[in-house]
Amino acid sequence: MLKRFSAKNFRSWRDVELTFSKGINVIWGGSQDGKTNCTFRLVRLVKDNRPSSASFYSNFAPDKGSTIVEIETYEGRTVSVVKSVEVKRDKESGKKVKKLLSTEYTHDRRKKPFAGVGVNVPDEIVDILNLGELNIQDQNDKSFLITETPGEVARTINRITKLDRADEWIKDLNTRIGVCNKEITVLIGDPDKDIIGKIKEIEIELFKYENIDKIGNYIDRAGRLELKIDKKEKEVEGITRIVGQLGVLDDEIDILEKVLEADKYLEKAVVIEEKIESLENEEDIIKEYLFVCDEYADIESDGKELKEDVEKIKNWYEKADGFDERIEVLSDERDLISDYYTVYEEVEDLFCKREEGKKELSVLLNEMGKCPLCFGVIDAKCIERILKEI
Image (cartoon, rainbow, N blue to C red; front, side, top):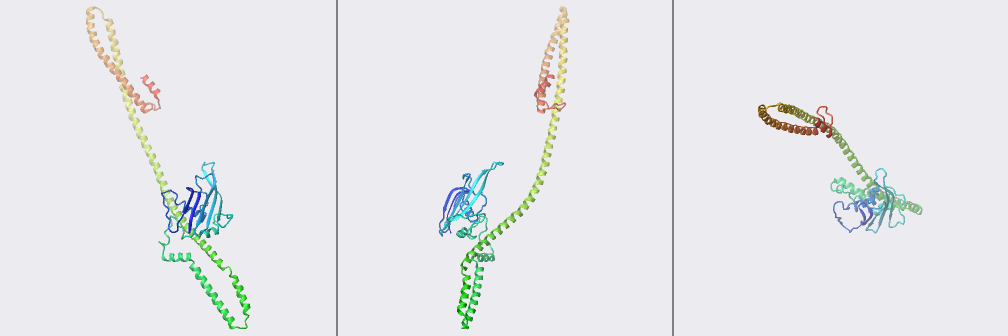
C-alpha cells in the first residue's frame, strides 16, 4: 500500500509531497489545480516509465535540471526515479525543446542506481510497488468488473488469484505423491531391495526441486507480464477505434472541402453582382452629369444674349442727341435701364445657377473619380482644371 508521494520539477508542481492515511483518501481541488499530476501521472511515471519523452519536465524549472519522484509504501520500502532533462531553443521555430538525457531508478536497499534503464522498469522496482490493474484505474476506464459479464468476472478473478496455476500445481503434486506411494510400497514389499540407495536417489531427485519456492516469483512476474499484454491489447483496440473514427472524419472533410469550393463560387457571384450594381450607379451619375452640362450650356447661352443687349443699350445712349430726342431717349433709356436691372438680376441669377451647377458637377466628379467622357481616373487637380475651363 502506498504511503507517501514526493516530486520536484514535475509538470505543474515545483515541489510537492503527499502523505496518505490507511483507508480512503480524498484529494480535493479546482480544475487545473494539479490533482491528476500529483497522483495518477506521478505514479505512472515511476510504475510504467511513461511518458518516455521529457514532457513531464516543469516549464518553470531551469533549462538544465532533474525531475525527482519518490514513492514510499506502508511496508517500509522506498523507490525513486531521477530523470535529467535539458531545454534548448530551436533555431528555426524559436520554441523551447525539452530533451531527456538519462533515467535512473533506485530503491532504499540499493546503493547504486540501475544501469541501462531504457523504456522498461527494473523488476525489483515493480516487485516493491506491486501495483496491478486492481490498484490503479485511469480516468476513462470502465468501472472495474461492474459492467462485465459473469464469465469475464470469473476469468479475471482466476487470472489475478492464479487459481488455474494452483490447480495445475495440486494435480502435479498429487501425481508425484502417487508415484512416491507406489515406490514406497515397492520398497517395503521387497526387503532385499537396496533401501539406502533408493533413498539417496530420492534425495538427489528432491535436490533438483530445492529452489521450487523461487518459481512463485517467476510466476508473479509472468502474471504481471500477462497484465501488461492485456493492457497493450486494450490500447491497440483503442487505436483501432480511433483509426476508424479518422476514416469517418476524412469523409466529412471531403464533404466540407466540396462545400468550401461551392462557397468560393458563391463569393465570386456576389462580387460580380456588386460590380453590376456599381456600374448601374455609375451610369446614373453619368446621366445626371450630362443633364447638368446641358443646363449649364443653356445658362451660358442666355448670359451671352444678355451681354449683347446691354452693349446695344450703351450704343443707343451714345448716339442719342437733341434735348427732345434725348428726353425720349432718356425715357426709353429709363425703360431700358429698368429692363437692364431686371436682366442684370436675371444674369446674376443665371451666374449663381452656373456656380451651383459647377459645385454639383464637382461633387459628381469626386464621387465618380473618373472622367465621364473617357472614363479615365481623375484627381482633385484635374477636376479643378475642368471647372476652370467651363
